[in-house]
Image: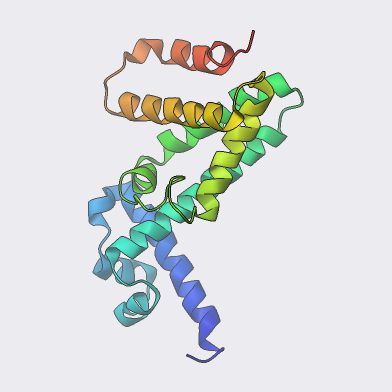
Length: 190
């Protein structure tokens, strides 16, 4: 491939990922097929396969982009508050907002890409950035406790709340109370 082809390939890859994201959110992850992606992204099917080996590779790219966008949302939430005690509630709210606004992408991030994990030998940068933001938000509340474990616990609680809420397993009328308890009381070191 010549150097002149590289920008087109990157642009095509970006268009394919953006189209896959939109299609997943509009019609579900099952609707994301290589033929539909090529057609909707206005790229040749051959160009799609030059950039992505298969549908799973596209879903993984959507998940990586999802982690990047989630990390950016958490960073913005953190930067928007002044006091350390306000960071976790702001970051937590940004996490929940992202998860509820992008349920199919969230599923791609957590249910369809087991290789994108903190437990992997090579932690993807976007996953590490997401974890880093959660850790930074909870570190002021650690009070001598292991900040990494606290961040893992916080992430687990957020993920569990998202999945149980989306699945209709939790009482809808207590959602605000659950979020308040998690943001203000559960990690309180005092």
